[in-house]
Amino acid sequence: MARIGLLGGSFNPAHRGHRHISLEARRALGLDEVWWLVSPGNPLKPKKGMAPYDARLASARKMARRAPIRAMDFEARAGTRYTIDTLHALFRRYPQHDFIWLVGEDIIAEFDRWKDWRAIARMLPIAVMTRPSYSGGARAARAMGWLRHFVRSDNHAKHWTDWKAPAITFLTLAPDPTSATALRARQPDWHQHIDGPDEATARQRS
Image 1 (cartoon, rainbow, N blue to C red):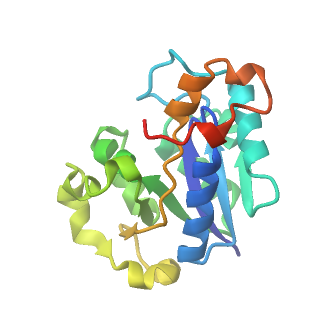
Image 2 (image 1 turned 180 degrees about the vertical axis):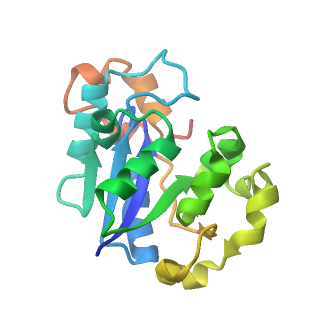
């Protein structure tokens, strides 16, 4: 049985910020691996500006190299669109693993708009990772009106497998302000170049 952190997203493109928070979360939660679930299409995000799926998956796999991170096309293969359906499919496919859902503060801010969001919270623990441009906003999110009853201390984050969902913890991680928005602004056609944009000069907030 492995302890797996699940990080979903568009990865448009994947960048070192994704890698950084994944490795930090792995350390804070005592994870064996982090799985990046590259979404074929987020129902809450506009299609305009979204690179082709194969390019986003390729950028994620490149960024995950030589790290305990797996960039996966699970949603595309399973044919799922919503997180609740993806989780059901994952649990059926990998019943031997323990999963925790890794999210940024921006996700919690919109979580009450997700399909069956309370059911998601009842399925597995949630670890909220701070982001520079959203710092402090997650605890005031509408969904936290319900989730606040299930907050667990980050001092016990490595014991998350003992928690019964719903359970949510807030991880204060060393920040990395790399932004996919900034990367796309610098090189809109990044998906036509397998190496992606030069991140070293694109470290700025969206």
